[in-house]
Length: 417
Image (cartoon, rainbow, N blue to C red; front, side, top):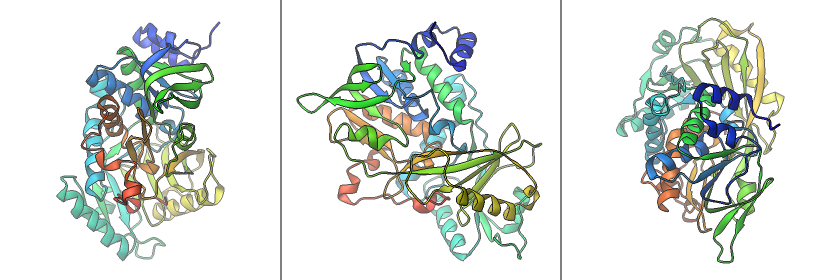
């Protein structure tokens, strides 16, 4: 008797799609696909959906070593914003935000997008100057962002401590009202259901061991734990493991992988109205619809594939949150986890072609992966389908590390990264 995930059973009950049952762990893949996407997270599933919807390419398989949305898509802190400094980043993330706006209607699935606003705190003169620069740059690019005094920040988020005697005094804040949160795993489920309805195969529990190349150097498919699966094109969108997969095709990636830690508190009644981020203390916080306080930390100071991370960093984050929001001093932690983020030298993503014919990659998002999900998926699908970059993802080429035309967004991450 084949085993199916609880998600598959629920989906069958809700949608009546028999394709879900056909595709779940024990399904036999086709002999050859037009496109294989490695990684069944939001980016990979979204790219499959847009390939089918906008480019008419439905002979697509999305393959994952685990379960659908079980990687970084299910381990992020749900924040969505587009207040990045440089023109290239602003266009990409604002494109994603445009797609987030109508995503629930597009997929006919509630991704729980909540436009509650993201406020970034300034604790010193450098923060004030940096965030005001961001505000001016954003407004020139048509991205909403405005400056708040400490008193205005307190009015917008009452739990905030703005005492001048605080360890981290608040000197003001930048506020993007169009930003907010969405439910992380719902995005993967929504894209998966919509893609499957258009004919895309989703193959879980099937690790990709290597990318296979033919005599001419072009990709011919992937070797997996279930055997070889042929494909005319392969796109890798496997956060935290891209370097390993790409190395099997002979492509070295300019990436380092770090644990990125987060935690949630016990649930309480609604008390926190927005998202607040602090670059100085490397912490950010919001409240989920279930009532938990969702708290994000920075990346660990060492490379690792651990999905737990080390204690000192998370302890520093919790201490800082309690200083900035004393109201939460006596709350208890419910659970803690870590995701694995790929970081490039300029802290910006790579979306595009590789030196290997018909091999594409989407990686290096660092802390920006979730918020970019629809935009990254949409532009990746365009690049895979046409063989040419979309105007929005054209600057995020792998080749920029050879030419030196970098997009250094380290300061926009708002966490240690």
